[in-house]
Length: 440
Length: 124
Image 1 (cartoon, each protein chain N blue to C red):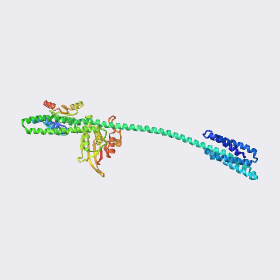
Image 2: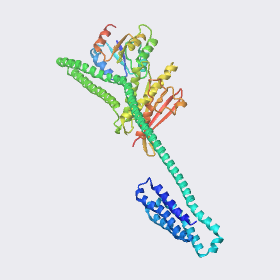
Image 3: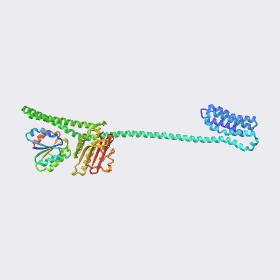
Image 4: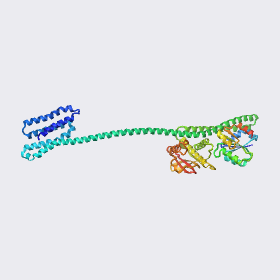
């Protein structure tokens, strides 16, 4: 049984050589391991021939094995094999105990001979068992590592996919935002187009006055010269007075036209987002009539009663006037459309009427300015009441409305100006749009 | 000759009064003004037999000129019916046709050519 230790050394050296073969440290150890392995064999043969005591042979073998183990264990290169090395320890211990026991007491050994032999064999076998278990462990570890690598690869792939999707979505969002901006601009242009006819009419009147009063003033001057020649100073003075008044009217109407054009330009320009003190009555009145004439120009049969109830003491409020003007324009246009629709359906004695009123309201925080656009038109059915503020929602036939008017109005009043829009409506009877804007 | 001018713009009044200054002075014409279709009809209730000519704008808030024309033709058909001329900024074919269909006697565009108007008045 003593030869187990020598065999263990030999097999250990062999195994280590084999394991190191593919590595970089192989050249370093190859020769040494060879020496150790074959040295063990040689030693075995030597002591078999020289030493008669099997026990002594066994002890020498055990000590050699221990020495080799110790030596290799100390080398950092063999760190990965520490389990394998440690597995040899039981054999060393068993060998020393058994051989010493036999050396000390033959009888004891003989009594337990079988046991000792089994122990020897068991310790030797233990090396292989331990190795096998360790190999299994390593295989599992490898599997786990492989699986981990697989998963990491999958995750990386998935991440790339998702990143790609996210980038695509971001691109789409950008496109949609650009399209939305385009549509909003189109809506503005559309509302500008609606105004054009109204504006043309509005400008025509002041221009007519400018022309007519100029012409008549020229005639009056000739008359005045005649009267002066006649010596009728009184008449001449009276005529001069008329001329003065005419010139004042010319100035007034000129300014009117000027204001209308400026207003139109402002409306078409991209919003400046600058808040300025504005009198809501003025812009309400202006856009009210503009909206009316605009619709009239499009549809000659259109007619409505225009009623205004402006609070003369309405305070100026800080607003982006072209944006709020656009909101009012939209509401007026909607109101006119509603009453016109009703007229088209029920006709008869129905008198379309649109009313705009303004007033100031006291609030806990200060005061609000309220503008109410009321019509006796077709009203809003309950079913769609929640939808009308949504973008792109419209009840008009295709091509007639973008459906953006009220949603833009909502953005302007509520988001940009911290105001409110309230709607009261009864289907068939009419609607009321109440726009509230804070004064401060 | 009494003429009723219907226009929502106030400033037409001094315009007419000055343009027809001589004629007014010599009592050839007399002008009255209404600023809406309703006002015009009210006026005509009393004075329809006196008014020879009605000059009406088409585009007005409330009752339009065309509506007024229709009412005039319905309410005051007794011969001789008043002459009604429409004045408007919208000088297009459709407007013209509609006015004539409803019984207008003439159709004038703004800016008013007062000389032309004076010519037409001569033929009344």
